[in-house]
Length: 186
Image (cartoon, rainbow, N blue to C red; front, side, top):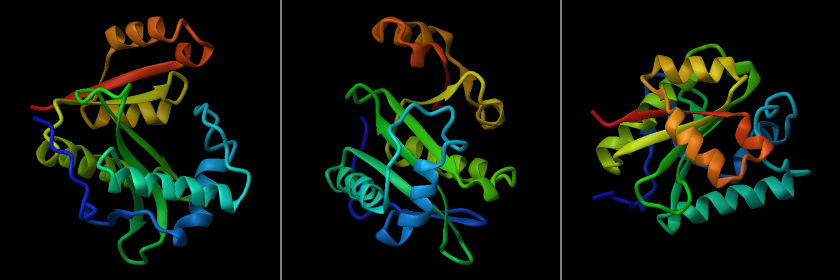
């Protein structure tokens, strides 16, 4: 049975990182993460226009954790507590057995292994604490670094789920661009 209890908020630590609850102190770096066109070229989400919209997103993420719906972490440098990225686990299509990991990292912190480190902690939490049966990761087919990172961390491409998603979404353009990886609990 899946265990959803994010109260108190689950803080995860790794060798170099702390995955902690988002705060309003994260507004500026999170704005960059969500609004930067180059960083988000593979993500079809709406971009916040200003810090107020970014703070509304942060508050929405915090409320989801308070309501035990999903959990979103700030990935912070352990030494400085400064945000370097974000990570989340959320249920897809409102079903209890279908969860997705989402992630983003500031450009200046890419290619240092930080996202792999954060992903490993998140996957461990998802399997060991939440008791998730599997975790999906949606990424754009052209996002080679994201695909490599997922494969390096044991995720495998799930073409069957890609076909189901494409059918559900009636082959929307965005869905045709996605590739999906899955890591089953071992």
